[in-house]
Structures are given as C-alpha cells and as structure tokens.
Image (cartoon, rainbow, N blue to C red; front, side, top):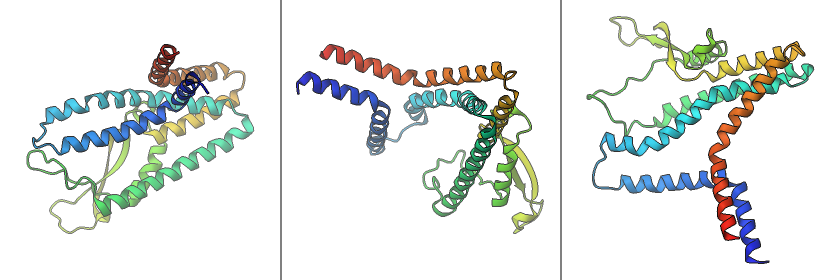
Length: 250
C-alpha cells in the first residue's frame, strides 16, 4: 500500500471521528494545563481566572443558545411526522423515560451532595460569608419536578425553573423542616422538562390535524434542520481544514 493511500485512510479516519478525537484531546489537555497552572507558586487573581475561562464561556453560551430551539423543533417535528396511532405511544414513552432519568439524577445528586459535599473544601467565600444551603425536603424536590412538567408560562419556561423554598418560623430554633413555611420562587435556568412536555403535546396535535397541520409541521422541520446546520458549522470548519491538508499532501 502506497504512502498516499495510507495518508488518505488516516485523513478519512480523522474526519469520521473528529468530534471524538477533539473531545478526548480537550479533556486530557485541559486536565494537564489545569494541573500545571495549579502547581504554580503565584496565586491567580479573579481577573486572570476570568480571562482563562473566557473562551470556554463563549463556547458554552453558543451551545446554550441552541438548546431551546433545537429541543422544541426536533421533538415537535419528529412526533408530528409519526403515524397518529404510534404518536401517543412514543409520547408516553418519551415522557416516562425523561421523567424517570430526571428522578434518578435528582436522587443521585442528593446522595452525592450529602455524602461527599463537592466544592466545600475549595470554595472562595465572598465578604467572609459562605453561601447558605437551601433547606428543602426530598419530597419537595420530586413535587417540583411534576410542577415543572406543566409550566404556567411557556416563555418563562425557557428562562426560569420553579422550586420550593422552606423558610424557618420566626424566633424558632431546632424546628423540623416539615414545620417550615412553604414558599416558592423561579430560579434562572431552562425548564427542559416543561419544554419537552409542550413539544410532545404539540407534536401529537399536529399529527391529528393532518393536512391542516402540514404548514406548521414543515416550519418545525425546517427549524430543526437549521439548528442542526448551525450546530455542525464548527465541526465542518475542521473537516474543511483536513480536506485542505489532504489536498496539499496529495
């Protein structure tokens, strides 16, 4: 086998597995650089840390920008295009699957927080005061999951999540959490569960409308394809770069 053929096979391998390779390189590279910087004698200032985090912050912002339109359009177009007799089954399975995995994630998070308390050893306290942990029962967390499943405002669900807050009674000490006053608030963060529920219901509704719902179905299909193209633009750049390198090598 010639050197040109070997080079072509290697280029094709890198193009097919570019995302995986870059992810692995990024994980190991970030770990090594982080350990080297941590071993330095001088302490980093908050501004220097901000400068170092800036590229990653931009990347995360771009990904978060695509979450809502990609999620809603993909689920709605996929369920709306299914056969009407199967849409109900798919919707039920999707909701049950997502709800089950979310509950498992919450339970696992509670167990890990109570057992290993991540971040408690290296937290930087501002103004000499540490952050006070939120007092809440496990039942309240599970009930909040169901509440978030039915958001009162769809636009608000793209920005905020509902959660229960327990406030201790005034002038009371050693009071059980069950006797705390129950309040609530909306915290910053996308209510993914509510958006999934709405998308599933909308997709089933479009499927029932048949011919009348085709324009709306085509809109969500086009929006989903547009979001996928935007998501793949960064990786397409690397593929073009590899093609240019291959052309130069040949």
